[in-house]
Length: 383
Image (cartoon, rainbow, N blue to C red; front, side, top):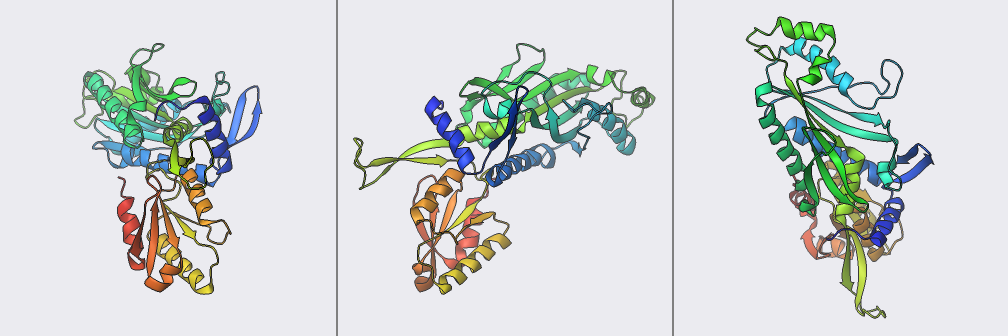
């Protein structure tokens, strides 16, 4: 879709609060703190997991995950992961005496030290979750490696977007050897990830013990750098909440659907709001939708189907005990970005068939009750 309008931006923020994605917890002159409901927490975790699969699991070089503390040694709140990286570099080298290239991966919360951007929703937050990789390579290959990482990261952002071209790369005007991955937000382009080629200067600020360790191994066959120069470091730093907001805006869609009951000027058509989130990111893969007037037999069928889905590691939303109409259940599922609604009704008892409604097209199809698990698994094979 085209750039989101001001009216749509207001609707989206209301929708995110209504459906349990995000709400403002507190605000003062320093910025806001947000809390995330069930849908928002699941969405954040899905984005983080998909990033982890891409950066850690599927890389063709060595990757070492590490952790750090929120408070630094002087009890100041952490604003980045540079110190933790330098600390872990020496430990990793001593443990594995590893060769280049390799990466250290770190995730966690940081705290902004600069002025916040007013009225930019999650960008106002004092707290932010950073997903960071520090990539070590030989200095003579740093430019090539930098280009490869920029290409790989942009590919990741576009892979899961409804509108891939909305994510762009741009050279920083403030820093040299820095690429920003940008998204077109309602207030203009803003960065969701920064990729920096620090060169060897990054390690020059290491502790004397680390520098001595590297110096003593420079002539070793298994040294991290079998030369007289320090390794270059390329940092990829993703802002998780910013990326989450970008994908929510990217997924926001208003569709026109036909209705016999509409008396508006545009007769026969009403707006339908849908979050067309990629199946890898959707808070739930499937929702159990039921018709009104359930009987005990139908309740047992619902329990059986729900159990089958859960045991297949398919995340489902089962609120079949509420009294919403079937149409209202579809509206809720569309606004939560759930790709499929499994409809259980009297036909499920009479003919052992289950209805499956597709979020994006609203098309429905009938399948046998014994096939539901395999059907959903096939549909959500996203990676």
